Image 1 (cartoon, rainbow, N blue to C red):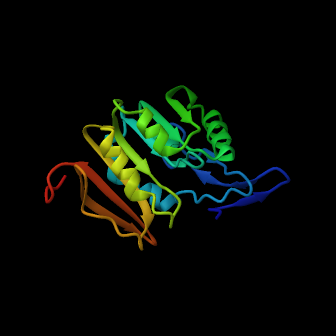
Image 2 (image 1 turned 180 degrees about the vertical axis):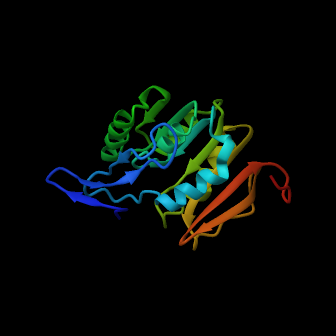
Length: 203
């Protein structure tokens, strides 16, 4: 799917995704031709970062199933200290790196071209303030990814996990130590927010 303007050439289909705010504001990002992924729409991304707000500056941010790097780059633009992008599709990995170069945010980024579950195990012991996951819809990856995040202790004190999914995807109120404290609907997309805690506690 393309958002805004699409330009065709022999090498790739370029979707004009934009950075919404921060030091790279209005910078355009692209996706590879033939890539089957689904970039996070601008209005979903804007809602996400409006909710995250002051959590982003200085944060350590983990972008799982990163696709084009659209969400993680937005976090960098808004002041995240470090973003780790995890994506196994080689074409998407190249686009993430190209996009990072284009917006001048390479130095605070790490791109891991591996399976998400292997990376989560490898990152065990590291901690992140925000973990964002947007797996392909309909493959049932959301719950096992949340379980792995909890299992490997990847959240810093006060950290949160945000899962993007179709509104038709049901999520449990609690996954291990992670408690869902908020859901936010944007069109057909829902953002589910989790923190370690006791069921029934708010943020």
